[in-house]
Length: 133
Length: 382
Image (cartoon, rainbow over all chains, first blue to last red; front, side, top):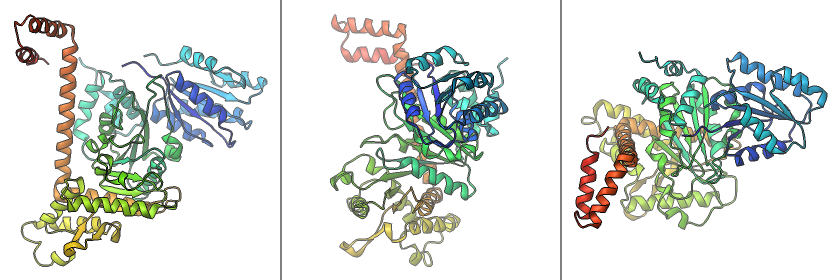
């Protein structure tokens, strides 16, 4: 059977704005992916626990609260701690351009800011999966 | 030399990554899963498998979240298989059951996996049976299967679950819905969720009336089989009267255990499920019909009591084993049919079938001779 791309869409931190996350979830679904949506206010520990149990290829996180510099790298670190090294981690939300190089250095593969067409995100995922079939 | 099935060993130690990887292999029908599943076989059959089914929006996920918490509180380890539909157009899926339960993601005694139906009908995904076996062998004591939101005929969950909880809600339709065939027949425990909403009492009454009628008509249902078995052991709704006098002897030690089970079963939901029947003054034994408000946790303890009492009743009467044999025989039959079908799709078979078709048209063979010839050609194939 063909390999399905599984993506965890998560909202770490305390902001309650999940519209962007839902738009992305729907776009990935329409691109034929299986999207596990965990809802609002997730801790990095919960996100990593879910990513492992769901055996996802991608963790896609959205933050609008400004806590991205803390929470995004924390998820990457926790995945590493658990020995997970084949999951693509990407981020989105209201993220200042100046913060993006630091996030990439911390292991976030790409950061998608407001206005990015969903097709860009979809293509990025398809081209950058760490696990091949 | 064959590679040792390392994943199954790690899964046996409840290593979440290994369990998750095995389930992915099952989902994509990876041939190498077979060695792993064979290695796990000896450890299966220990879990209590609980099916949660009902229409979309009935609150199945919220209910499951609360059941997990209650079972954890009773010291049980729990796995959840949550199924949501795939798009028939893109093959994509939004698996959103986890939204209600992700608070358990950091609890090592809980494992939650979302599965997309990937085109499979019947309320489950194709991978569900093997996924349950992986989780069972990994040592999760209770396994909850949450089906997709079902309509009226998605009843496959009865083939996997020991105990099926049918979740209804107020506001879905009139009482004719309750007497239609299909999902309403598969419940072992009935639950009316969102019981704080208008009309909940009426739904409870309608379900109970539907169950009473089934009993009066002598309809073969899952619960009537259990009650008959309990009655045969001298255990029933009026067991308290009878056990003192006659129930001993034949039933023996099993009865002692069964007494408790039956008592628990009949007590669960108390007056709810033992309906007085005016005609003949019999007491009809009905399965529990419980009112819950999953959002607030109301009725959850009673629901878990009823689920566990049902399991105890099955175990005490020997029906647990019978049901599992029935289900496995059904699954084996289906798998064998799949295998025959894929055998027929092989090129050489297609050629053979096509040649028979030509012979039928030439009148060299009739249709049934051709069918016999095809059946003969499949015999002895792996």
